[in-house]
Length: 345
Image 1 (tube, helix red, strand yellow):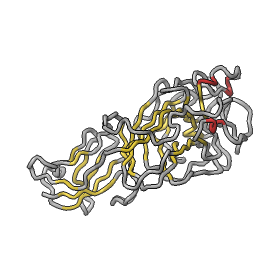
Image 2: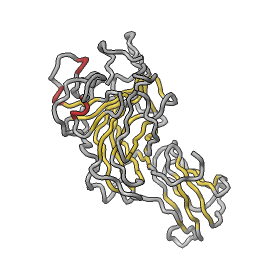
Image 3: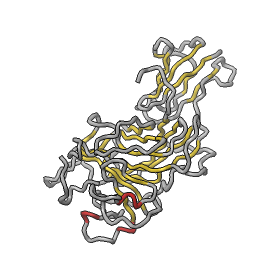
Image 4: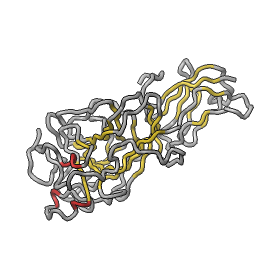
């Protein structure tokens, strides 16, 4: 990471759906029969390491400290970090500590095991060949994903005490090959999975568990986590430091990243004829009004809109009248989930 506590070098949707990977964001834990399946993220708990991290990562290092966590790296000039309890007593210099109980970004106990990663999801202090210093963490999958299969993604985040800004959104990007950049600018790719919290991610004391569902194109073998917004990033001033030091940043800890096969799906045909069979469409329960489900007809007229909590469409329009047979389009706000549903009576 770019360490501001020490002197180092300074650096100056269209509405109709298209077929693409989609991600179902959920904030609750569901029990599925596939829960015990193998995690497809290699070293997703960050427990395997070549040697103990000695400090925060530096722009001048090659390889960077994060690469001591086997299978993970910083894909840009940004300097994401690896923290491990093995480094808790390695140094008396708090500015470079890479432990978990006390490090240059704050303090957090690992969710499980001994290690976790960290990165600047926002940093407005400027960067190398960029006005922004954005950081990402990138890892490998144990096998490439299969076309048309839905996978469940889960991860845990915690806001580091260094953060004086908090954000409402970050994303996860799956790719066939590693993505990279020689600058610290935001990566110019569109994440398939976006985690959005209208109340912002603020918790520095606990780990926040997040889940998502992802429909693969096939061939994806790498995962990249971070903030894919640029100056459009929605930030909130979280705290003001007493000293003149103004980091103007959001630093996130990350632990236990998992991808497993899922059997979850939204049906594309239903028959609301009152026979008690396939009479409604049940969408993912986000438990969050920010994730409204919107259904429109072929002319773009609003047919159904949920409040994001236990969303079920019974084939009626907003006035309670039965909809005619035909094709309807749905979209889930603040996600890239969209598709079509055939209504038949």
